[in-house]
Image (cartoon, rainbow, N blue to C red; front, side, top):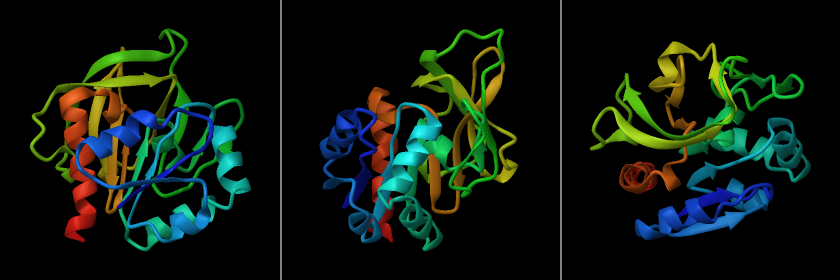
Amino acid sequence: MITIIDLGISNIKSITRGFVTQGFNVIVTQDPEDVSRADSLVLPGVGAFPRAVEVLKSRGLWDEIIRHAKNGKPLLGVCLGMQLLFDASEEYTLTGGLGLVKGTVRKFPEDRHVPHMGWNEVEQVRKSILFNDIPDKRDFYFVHSYFADEVEEGAIVAYSDYHGRFVAAVQKGNIFGTQFHPEKSQRYGLMLLRNFALLTEKG
């Protein structure tokens, strides 16, 4: 069973459908009790970092996400959800993140048009179960204006390039994150979602 957190500030139909089409059962919830019982947890998101933090804390989800991760259960952050895994973000104002992976989220430099949107090649630099059976240097779909900087080296599993290299995916034990949208990345994106979902069955 895959539990997807609904922040209420982004469309999560695509990622829900992505898991369902791969044959997995899904719960979409804003209830902290559902999160506390989750086997595998997905934190998607599109929007502003400070607003997402406010929503998660006001609904009692923040501490449950941290508890889930520290209990060794699989957690996947997607796009803004990946950014929330880090220590802090500079979006609008400095805002603390979940602190599950070391790093700070910053805006792309002024010489780059934002948002960075569209298909971009992802280079795998470290083995991760997320990319099982996915060939290296395949394209995935991105939509973002901020990127993770000063990420702890051991957690970086993939990079992409937008007039300069940036972190595209991370893994720290049971904690995973993708800056791209696997649910919008067709064949290989769906394979990635399946790889994550299978962690629960193997656990």
